[in-house]
Image (tube, rainbow, N blue to C red; front, top):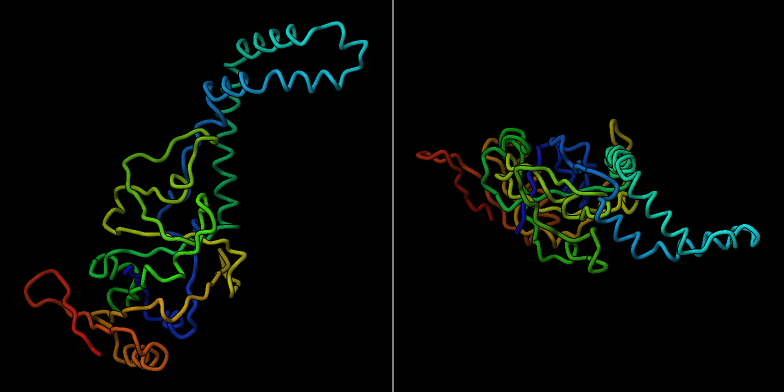
Length: 279
């Protein structure tokens, strides 16, 4: 089971059966989806391309030249000249590739916010910081989702980056790769060690696939429908107000009769939460 902390004004997640997939720039971590793209390609990668494709490229380009000109230089001569030019000017090419890497990082971030939404869940239902940050200082609630629900297992191919759960990893350094070697894991699933306490899992989605769309600033809200059966547990915050509690219990009784309901309580002896079954 994985959990989603919510503030008290988000009871609509239960009443409507829709949940938001959020654009990366709307997260509270400014490093989201910001890998360090050091270059478009390294010298080693370019050497591989030269060795693999240069002959074919030269043959194709020679065919575009009038025959009278083409006969003045052989493919082997042109290949040797190209290799010499490539080696002599690699320093300039390298600097240009580095600048292009920085621009690629910016463009990726902009496009990610237009195209990709992320649902963030956690392994932890009892983290005091997350109850405070994401559930309005324990006044909200926490939904426990069945991670084995088909909703979380819609991977369309082995290389698919969308519609299936994956665990976030935490590192000291940001991912730093050339554009051609950057993986989906490094793009979407690496965060600073400062966030390790969240024990996060993510599912990415294509924003265009959302069932509901709400205009909002700075980013529109994209909502995706989940099945009621995907909810296994709801935990009410330790400081939840009675009116909010009653509303949630009414919704659960009507639409989620199978769900286990718990009330968080402040421990009398420890800096901890205790849970009481309400079913």
